[in-house]
Length: 184
Image 1 (cartoon, helix red, strand yellow):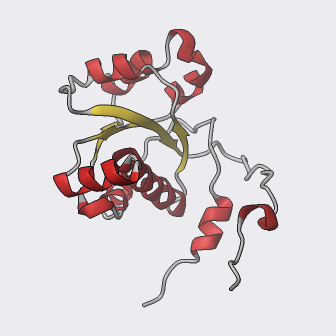
Image 2: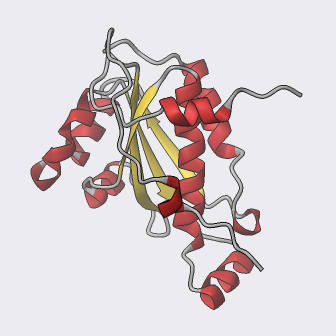
């Protein structure tokens, strides 16, 4: 089975902070969400929900709740045609036991993997994005009327890049600082 060149997608993807105003078609968003749904998770717990605002007035209300006051540094995201709120849901008991024993917070880790699937599928479709971890969690949770066991973790701003915007140069640490092959 042939696959798309994943490394090329990873190399081309960057945090987009300016958006063309045209909408992202629902079928494109659904493929991105399907990629997220298929992500692996501890004990197959799938501790995530994705709330998508791609139409007014909800998209504007979500942007207003998320990016006011001290969160204005991310107000560029209010211009994105799509805002996605990634919410953590409770883990199954097997994953909670593993989390307790190992001390690793599985739910946010799993939700992060699913979010990256969403973002990379978007990149493969020509949709840019910016992963946001700094927004008004409380106001967003309130707007979405989330029960106490659900918690916003991340937001993703999505949309098409403006005409003529190229991939910016990115600085990455050299490979020898990032990975090590273990020897006997």
